[in-house]
Image 1 (tube, rainbow, N blue to C red):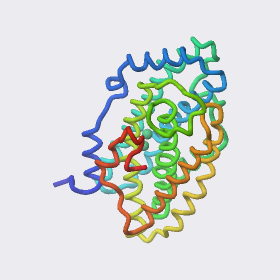
Image 2 (tube, rainbow, N blue to C red):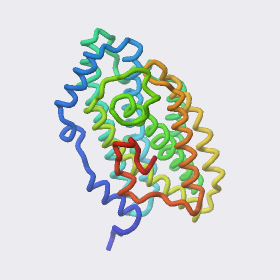
Image 3 (cartoon, helix red, strand yellow):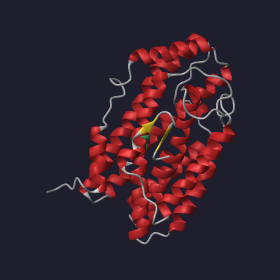
Image 4 (cartoon, helix red, strand yellow):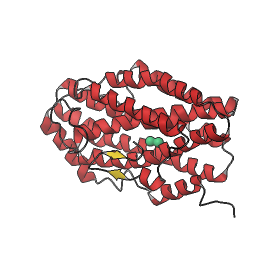
Length: 305
Ligand SMILES: [Fe+2]
Ligand SMILES: [Fe+2]
């Protein structure tokens, strides 16, 4: 047969198809309307609302960037099961971009207008600080390097930038902070005051997190394979991740009006340490894909955490 459904990539692809969701059909419009209403009733300060919007702008731009930047990987992967999985990942990143775009149109801008705050486009440069820009520039370069020289080291660097730092550490930290601010779950020490619970936003983020659990699991499996079977030095992985970490901290440090950056940065450091352990310890195991995509709302964490 052409496909190997029992391979790790084959299993991941099956899981992606099974878990398919639609950013329009599966997030009820009534939930987004309620989110908008709650923002208007909450009357956040200009600075708080700017920061809440900034977080969503960074997510939206990040999803757009990863949608664009995954393509080099699909050009170099030879195995058809890998190809199936990567095509599902590009499709999912595109859907994540679509969710944030919808949220901006239907919630963010109308709420800003009703609150009398300046309506700012999600593409406005004011949202994007130097660490964010640099991190995504480095990611783009690491992915593009695969087209120049498809070596095990360059593949490891690409997975470290894309799957481990951006999708895992940066994005998962952002979800955790949104969940803590806007749902009854998450950490108590992040929000600087009580913010409205936003069911539409949290529902979208939860589904995205579930997809990301699968993407991150894929990246971890691939880097472990490169270390164990292709001679990649685990030090290269540690160095790449540690080089990028100051950018993640720098991005989180810009959030001080609605949330406390200290526990957020701690959470991201902790996550990075656990990633490095799972990847470099030959006895550690990447959790099963069904576990990676399972969102445990009560603990606001996934096995991928
Ligand atoms: Fe995504
Ligand atoms: Fe992703």
